[in-house]
Image (cartoon, rainbow, N blue to C red; front, top):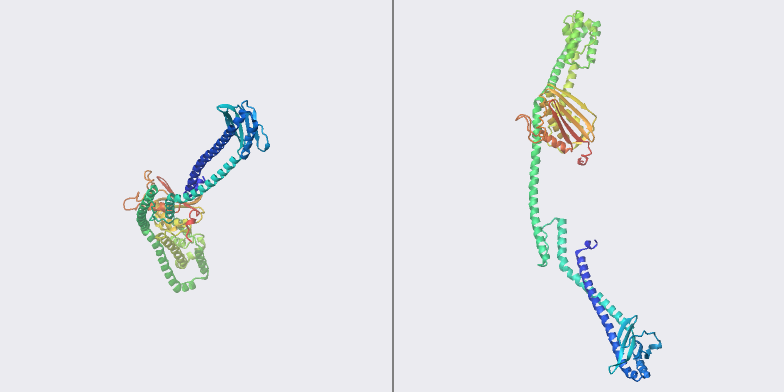
Length: 582
């Protein structure tokens, strides 16, 4: 594992060194063992020669049984340092003469007289050689020679060979260091170029070729590969730029489609919005006219009227006006009819003339309880004038209240219209109450809704979320418009807002004809529409789905005849927090 992680330079040096070392060890081992064997063979041959020469000198003494001459010959072995023992045996294999260096006798194992032999044992070489005289066996000679000198010679030789081996390895390392460059340099150049390309992304870098061998071919192919990559990268950059431009164009087109869909939805609302604005404006104009006329009367005729009114009736007159001004509740048309009928009966019971006219005025003044306490005023000969003046004066307050209500209504419509008509503000992420957006859209569709649609709202307490508020307004516009269209302005519209796990959910249900099962999977496809040609672009729900997915939410739809529900799931902040702009 360690070897695998080494650089190629070190690997090549190690391989060369190991191969060389193995080769040198094999060669040196062979040479050393061969030379040691030769040293031993030389020593053995020299010892045999010495034994033969001494044996020849001792042959005559053996023949004449003159041991003194043999001893004298053996004593000459003293001049040979390595000979430690010399023994001459007669033909009966008995000791005839013997020599022990330094006089130390050593037990010698006897052997057959006519068999020559030699052997190394311990630190000695033993040689036994027969002695012949005129081809007749006269005896034998035994020599024991010390191998100490041979051991020293071998040690010196081994030391020399070891030093030679070390020297060769050093020379071999120097050669390996030089030779490895032939292979490693081109590969290292390839590695360097690859790192440079990886770091800087410059595919115009080229590796210099050092030769025409396999590495040279590799360098050529590598350079060709770099050239191809550079060409492809340039082509890819060009293509990327084209795709970026196309994507930009598509985004612009998408924004235009979204804006056109938004404007189309607003265009369909124009008539209703105009009515919703004109109605309070008409009420304001009417109330202003009433205030103007009443003020003229009050300034000119009221002082005269009040002075002429008897004191008893003044008190009842002021009570009547005070009760009228204190009545703040409003009446429905049905309630007005009921009260008029009841008051008329009461007045007719007390024989009041023009009972219905007085009942109508009392209902307008919101005097619907205990009308009997005003009988004295009604029985007066000037009752019609008294009640008419009271009506005019109290109408000042009703007119101001009408103006306030109408202005508030018009303000809500304008605010809703302003919020729904903003364009190209899709990247503004804000913390907002999504119910406010739903209510804004409902305000804009109020004219269509009040024609015959019953709206039911059930809003649970939900947290504000970070969202693209303007874009969500378009979602509510698209879905509510489709719901109103599906009901033909008559039906029931249920709107719910609640939390479910990590989502805020807005559910919009209409009682329309429903979506056919074979079309429900297509309603989010671009340009698919169930409306007649010319009444829809077919991109409203596609845009709505994209907006919801941009919020990392989801939209679900369930439909059957008489009930279609769109459920919009929006994450509660945590998924969009990393997108919030500072």
